[in-house]
Length: 78
Length: 78
Image (tube, rainbow over all chains, first blue to last red):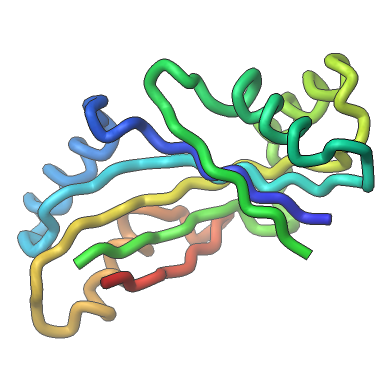
């Protein structure tokens, strides 16, 4: 089974990497871009297990995201 | 308008970061996880412009992904 965990910085947290890309884009003439935010996707391949959803939530909190500055969402695939 | 560019390593390219997370997960008892691959999401906020799709494709190729080892997909939002 495939699971995707999307991790992104909270709206209130500055994103220096996104800001650097934005400035570079503007210097290269792409001035229609107003903002850039960078996030991560973790694609997990998992076997069947009990309480899968809770376990994935646990892993997301402990290992994939930093809940102080990041938020995450989980998408369970086929 | 919001645009998301998803960037991930090609299937044939090793992902040491994903591998490290996998090993750490297994050590922590999450042995139902079979593989982990890490990708990036770039969330762009853009103004209207001519040939938007081609320009976003250009930026993805030049600035967001490394086409030698990565593939990307573009999702145009509302």
